[in-house]
Length: 436
Ligand code: URA
Image (cartoon, rainbow, N blue to C red; front, side, top):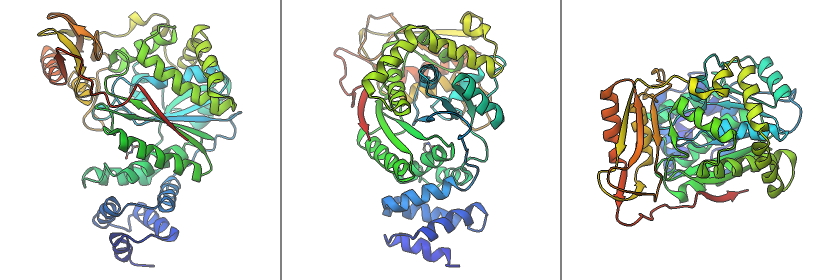
């Protein structure tokens, strides 16, 4: 076997790695035969020298093949998956899944948990009493075939190379490398087995990619990986310059999603949901986007998307009384009204910080196994560019203790500005480019 030190050196010098070198690197790292210090050096060499499209595709496929790959062939129809690079208040899966399923496109979705400033769909769903997100594959497939939709947690054996590499990247300052992000996300998406993939690449102060140029580059690389792997893949850039919708925090977001599914037009949230859902329907039914958009809107106005959500909750063991009567959800012990200290136009200057504030209130975790408080979080009353009079309510913060509310409020206050004119530093429109 070629010595791994020679492969590291090759990349350090900016040369192209062969398919077999990439395969060997991933297989031997997962087997424990390449130590972390050598892999750290390789990751840093990749950060500086980059990867060609061919190398990047091969790396992603090797990572995909490091564990279980799901075979969704027993589910009828074209399966379309969606991935979002995350944000604050992003409850889109809870709304899009039912819309797309109600339009006849099956959604077999594996989602993640929240970490850091972003929330996770699985935590949000688990705020519904009784609902299980850990189902065996047989039940997962059966639910999708019968209802069109099932959302489960990612299994431990999906792309294990990514888990190991991500932990290493976290402590070697190599998380932000666009090639490494692209291979990380796409290895999991490809292992999850859908026929086609829609990527929602968020950008702005509440996104992983704060810079729109980087977001576009990431989107382009992921789209090429997906298509090279034989799965039609498209990406939609969306803005995370402010929290999406009004609610941030687990059961608060489920309650907002229920209102949206019942037809309330929460404007920024629904524009993103309709756009993403329409892309998925267009991919799944092979029809033009405009036609898909009409179907998506009709799925909400007819109540069919809401019905699918209720059925999905029931099939996953959740108590549907909470969906039909959202006032049953547990409410936080303490609340705090955040009011404008002076008059001015509101701007969320640091949206990720709003996610951190929700975390301080108990809604998120800073370590993987931290417990979370399902009723904690923030409900906004005002959004970007809204005018606030001194004393106006900007948001209500919910937590278990007044100390939590105080520290959440302090952080919240650091992440907004009130100015005489609206600050126009929003870098992209709510809906940006589509990358095909
Ligand atoms: N999300 C992922 O899954 N991987 C990354 O590297 C970054 C964000």
